[in-house]
Image (cartoon, rainbow, N blue to C red; front, side, top):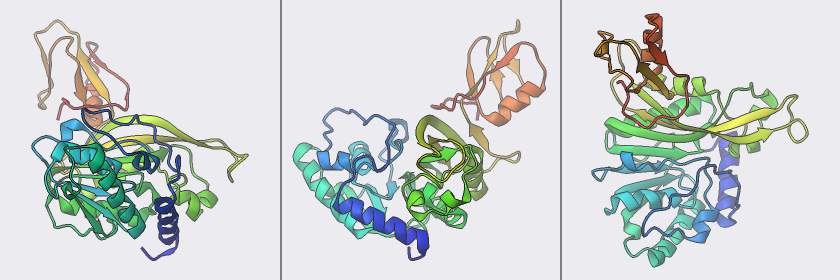
Length: 324
């Protein structure tokens, strides 16, 4: 990374590696509490994320895992908890000092966790725009509060790289800030604010569209939470800017002919008198049995104008078992 804002980002996180800065990113998700998992204090202090990318239902059958932007190594350690294979988890970072800090944190983790070995994690120097990883070799790829830093062209390239390295049906798990208020140009161009995961936040629909434009056929919105406020008193903005963090899983499924399946937490419930309702498009609704539906299916069901099907609003929480 050698252009403008990316160089600023690199310098900020070089300093954060050498001098941990609690609250550099405001994590809004409680730290995983798992049996026999102890996280070193310094690793906790270097938890520079805005959510979590670790989900146990993604991590069955010993998947090969890639994590980009290692921070203090906490999520790498959590991924290794589920994997426990030599080099089963790959960590990539452009900041050498952050890689070195993670190595030290893993040695501390070994003393706290008898099950853990540092060789479970393969740390590599590289950046998100040119991943040092083979094509179609990864089951689960993840990043936490990194991609929102990128400007549009770089974000597209980072997403293309994740798509390239994932196996078919592999999962890209992301946690990033989003913002529905138009971000002032002065804030968007502020290199430090962008590096601190504040001014690069996109509206959620734009964020999802960038992911699906790369080719991911299924999108899951798993969580959406309040994150930060940019106010006129402290920032160059005329109005209050509310930022949320979102956790998303993008699956490398084939793209459906009628467009991607995006799950935002909508549910369909059939409460008619028949034994079931079949929309003749692959979706069967049983009476009073809620079915999670993607936004596309929700729209199609709503267009039928039936008075015995209820479609909920988006909850922005989805944990599987849906229509597609």
